[in-house]
Structures are given as C-alpha cells and as structure tokens.
Amino acid sequence: MAKKDYYELLGVRKNATEEEIKKAFRKLAMKLHPDRNPGNKQAEERFKEINEAYAVLSDKQKRQQYDQFGPSGFSQRYSQEDIFRGSDISDLLKDLGFSFGRAGGGGRRGRTQYGGFEDLFGGYGRGQAGGAQTGDFRDIFSGGGHQEQGPFGQKGQDVNSELHLSFDEAARGTEKKVRFPKGNRIEEVTVKVPAGIESGKKLRLAGKGMEGPGGGQAGDLYLKVNIAEHPVFKREGSDIVVDKEIKISDAVLGTSIEVPTLEGNKKIKVAPGTQSNSRIRLKGFGLPRLQGGGKGDQLVRVLIKYPKNLTGGQKKLIEDLKKEGL
Image 1 (cartoon, rainbow, N blue to C red):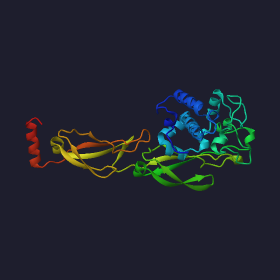
Image 2 (cartoon, rainbow, N blue to C red):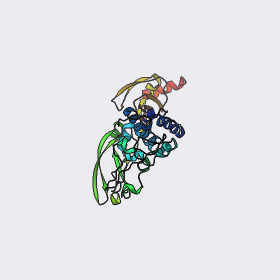
Image 3 (cartoon, rainbow, N blue to C red):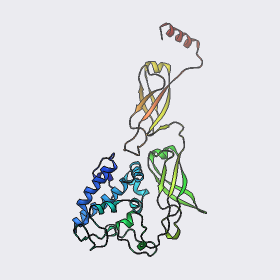
C-alpha cells in the first residue's frame, strides 16, 4: 500500500480531535464499503486506506509515532498487524449496519457480498501454526483470540537496548547496524534513523524482540537514542546554538564574522552596538523537525571578548573613552 498521508485520506486536519477523526471515518466507510460498491476496485482500495488511516489516528500512541516519524518512518516501525491491533473498526462498522462474516451473511440489505478483512487484505491474519483462516474484522483488528484461529500462543517479551549516535548522524539521519543482546545470544539489525531525532527518544523495531511462546508473535525491540555532544554546536529542540566571540570594537562599530553551520561556514553581519549574549538567527540552518516538517534555525550567540591585560596605549584609549561618557 502506498505511503499516503493518513490525515489527507480521512480529510481531517492534523490537530483533529478523536471525535472528528471517528466522524470522518464513519462518513467515508458508509460511502466506500464493498457492500455499497460491488466490483468497484477503486472503492475497495480506498476502503483499505481509510481503515488503515483510522486504525492509526484513533490510537493515541500510534498517532504520536506517526506524527513524529511521518508516513515513511512509521511504516518502517509498524507492521500491518501492529496497525490494526486493538482497533474498534469492527464495532464502528457494525453500528453502521455492515457485517464481517463470509459472503452470504446478513448485511445492511439482508445479504452482504463482502467476505471480510481477508478478502481485502489478501489473507493477512491466517494462523501461523496451521490454524483456520480468519474471516472476521474483530479477529484481525483485536489481535485474535477466537478459537478458530488456531494456537497463536503468547507475544514474546520486548527487548530494550541503546543506539549511540554522533551529533552529525542524528542531525542528518543515517542507517546504522546495531548489535544487541537477545536472550543468551547477540543479534544485529540495521536501523534507519530519521534526521533530527533527539536524545532520549526510542525507536521501535516491530518483531525484533524475543520469540513468542507457543509460536506466538515475537516481541519488539526498543532502542533508546543517545547522542554524543558536539564540540561546537549545542542543541535546543530543532535549533542549534553556536557561540562566537568578537572584540569590543567590533561590537561597538559592527563587523562581519564567519560562523560554522551544518552546511559549512557562513559569513554574517554583526550590527553596530550589539550586546554580549545577543543572538543572531540563521533561519532554516537548524535540525530537521520530526513533527511538522521543515528545519529549525541556527542561533549565533555573540559574546564580547574583554582583554585581561591592556597595553599602555589601549589603557589610555579606554580612559579617553570613559571621559567621553563611554
């Protein structure tokens, strides 16, 4: 399935409330449900998409991850099974009068041509240990639990480890191989790190945890991000701060200075009369924002350098300036 924007699929704003999201889904489901569009493949594809979009945006944790990592990053962390686990889609569609059993069951018009989740998603959700097929929205969206599905077992334990990054790796994004302990062995995975990630955040790799007892679903791997300090740049959210010292005379009269950025050195102007600790903003020279897109800014903090020792001539000039009221 193409990585489309879930908000656009449901026709809601990014700050939409839970009720607005549910209302939008119900309206589209009434229009696109296969019972109302027999043989219409385009409507069927749209119905798949809005189901997936609602399953994510109606769940606070999944929505937060989606907002943080965007469509591409989210799809790398969540399988389709993860997306639909715990969803109330089956209940919503039942409220609208649709059924989810095999073709021929009772529907809104007494009979439905729609054979359930399997028909749309190509058999996804079949038992892994020889169990029977599932033909029920509730079986899939709630993560199973019906005897007809066969012995799925329990989900395996999650594994926690750490991911160490340099400042540049976190700023630009990277792919990194990570070795982590898994039971009594060491395993290795390749992790795609989104540009702009912050220290302390956790990346989730679905199914990379411990194997599930009895053939159950594997747990997940959570990698806590640790970012090394940079010798020049300091981070403030999506902004970065650089300190730059200038002489007293340059602060008074104004000057041009060269400062480092993530994109190389850049020459900027310092206005006459600049005070110590003033900040000059370089718009868009910061870190990529995980939420909302775009980049933060770079802030150049101007520090006036005061000499510890003065020559005789310098001291006389300062005394003359003092007499002039400076």
